[in-house]
Image 1 (cartoon, one colour):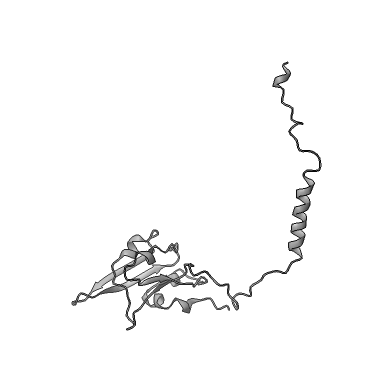
Image 2 (spheres, rainbow, N blue to C red):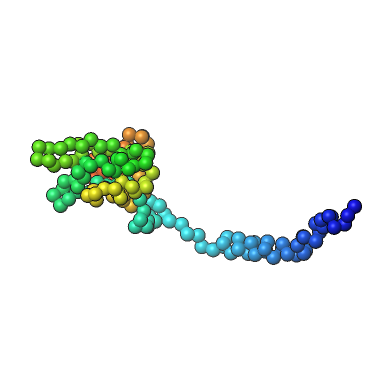
Length: 158
């Protein structure tokens, strides 16, 4: 047997005691965190602040007269990847367009923000409301009236 082809495994092992130091460092870190003060937020009385870029429930914006800014162009519904937006456009005799029906299925929505980016009139936005909960699927389908006031649906506790 040729000795040049023999692999010596023992020469590749670490020296004794080299594994104890990382183990002790890990134990010290664990003990330090075990006895430190815990960070707890008393939800829902105190809420964690969300980033300005946070994308929560949708809002349909209104102008200074209280009318929807939406002109029912349908770009938000077309660009929506999960097809969570449905709308029925309506045009008056004077050429004014507005949505007759506007629905967003909040369960189906992935909160990507494409609808907000695509809107030419800046009529839809994603708010900071992140804790809307309900028991039925129908309550998570937002129509025009719910979309005007998403802050009313913030979880307030029992």
